[in-house]
Length: 190
Image 1 (cartoon, rainbow, N blue to C red):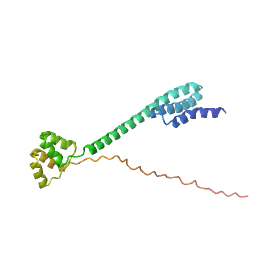
Image 2: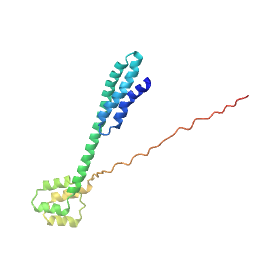
Image 3: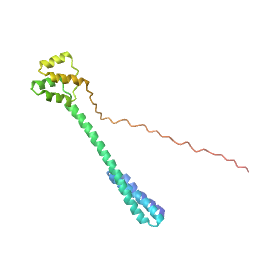
Image 4: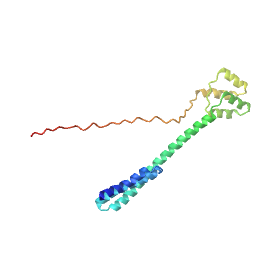
């Protein structure tokens, strides 16, 4: 009876922590670490005659260790979430803003926007152009400067980054089972 009570006292905190979905990893780590530490400390303390003291020390050390590990997991998850949000924001911004078309460049030139600003806009929108001779002639007729046309021609050699929000495919799980134990037959002689 006494052993059943000890086992229940050791496992109850671990079961409670594992079942709480609303808890952060830090809170789960503190609870689980304290439970495991208390159980381990009690067992070690029992051998030395100080069960309660061992349980308290084990709970403190286990709770601290579990809390540190849980906090590290929480921070890692926050960092991954922030990165995913940033990638999604850049992708949405690219879609909303999109690359500049030839008419956009021509309109900016006709509005007397400086070459430096037009070139900066071409670069920040990561616009890529493959200009034909007719395109160049049309741009010059629209008042686009040589510096802007040259920047548009240089853009053909740029590598455009592709952002993906698709998660990588999970790796397959391979389960290898041990072979069954060998059966040894022994014959008895009567």
